[in-house]
Image 1 (cartoon, rainbow, N blue to C red):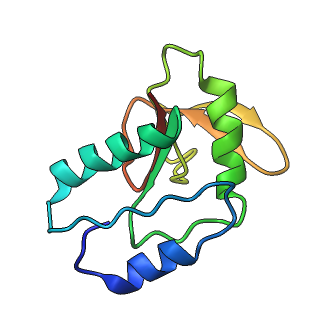
Image 2 (cartoon, rainbow, N blue to C red; image 1 turned 90 degrees about the horizontal axis):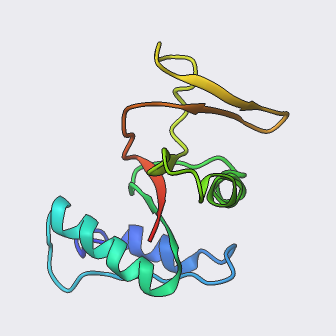
Length: 121
C-alpha cells in the first residue's frame, strides 16, 4: 500500500477473513509500476498465488471464495495468466463463457483487467 492513505492501510490491517493476511505499507510513495512489482514480490514470499486489489474497489462478499476456486481451477492451464474479479462477463464480444453456476459466471478474455486480479508465482 502506498503510504499516502492511512485509512486504506487501516482497513487492510483490520481484515481477518483470510488464514493469513500480510499488509505491507511502503516507506515512501513508489508509484504504480514499482508498487505493483513490489506487491507481487512481497505476496510471493507468502504464497504461490497472490491477489492484488485496487484500493477503491468494493468486492462482493464471495470474492475471496471465487479467487480460491479460480486459483485451483486454472493453476495448470497454461493459457491463463491471471484471474480477475472484474464483472464484465458478456460485455465484450471476445468473452467466452467457461463456467456457469449459481454463484459465478466465468469467461475467458484476451484483455487484462487490473482492478482485482490474482496470479501464480
